[in-house]
Each structure stands twice: as structure tokens, then as C-alpha cells.
Image 1 (cartoon, one colour):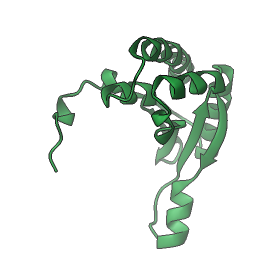
Image 2 (cartoon, rainbow, N blue to C red; image 1 turned 60 degrees about the vertical axis):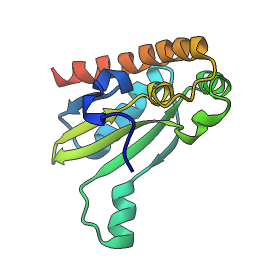
Image 3 (spheres, rainbow, N blue to C red; image 1 turned 135 degrees about the vertical axis):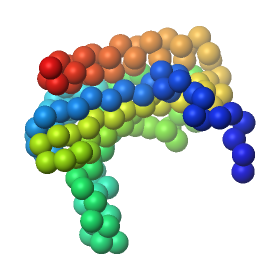
Image 4 (tube, one colour; image 1 turned 45 degrees about the horizontal axis):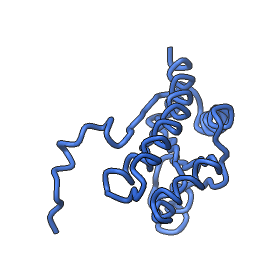
Amino acid sequence: MSLPFDPAAVDPEEFGEKQATLEMGHQEAIEYVRAVCTDAGFGVPVEFSPSEMLNKKVDADRDPYYVLGACNPVIADRALDATDKRLGALMPCNMIIWQEEPGLQRVYHVSIMKIARLLGMADDADEMDAIIEDTGEMVAAVFAELDADDE
């Protein structure tokens, strides 16, 4: 299967890639990122540890890796309407925290709203642009706080 575009040629800004590093323990980072997301207007209705599951089920020997499924219900409702309900396949907006090494955690995020637009899921382009702006401001606030902690 060939893709209709070269993924390596896509600017990470186009799919909303954000990263930060935190100098703290893994569990502390999870709690901190959850609090920062909440302060920025996200709830966290879904969270899980793929590393725990994989280590238990297939003896994967993975370092700590955690997913915080962040969501703002008002924006999620708008996004479902703007994409004829298809955005649900990408929900929630995940913040990933993985341990680079003990005491050093990476926080990673991509914008499901920007990905939906890139994939042509937006039936209402103007509303999707407004949603991308709204969520972009919230994510920027999260990463501004995380980056401030890194300094």
C-alpha cells in the first residue's frame, strides 16, 4: 500500500506535534501532566499504561509508558459535528508520557483535530479551523507550562 503523500515531508506543525521533557519520576510526571491538562481546560476521562499491559501479557519488558486521554466535552461535541461523527475514531486527545531514563520523562502529543483535517474528515472546514484554534490554544498552554518546568 502506498500513501498519497510522503509522511516524512509533512511538517510536524501540520499535525500538531508537541514534545517536552520533564526531570522527575514517571508517576510524578503523570500526575503533573494530568494537573496541567486540567488547568488548561481538559478533562482526563481515559488513562492507561500500555507498558504495564504489554509487560504482563507478552513479557515485553517495556519502560514506563502512560497515556492520558484528555478531552474538553464542548469542543469534542463540536468536532463530532464538524466531521460527521468520524472524529470519534481518533478520540481522545492523547498526552503520552514515557520514561526516557529514570528521572527523565518525555511528554508527547499530536493534534487529532489537525490530523482529521489532513485526512479530509472535516465536513465543515470553517468550524474545524475554529476548533483547531481553540484546542491549539489549550495545548499551547499545557506545553508552555511543561516547558517552563524544563527550564
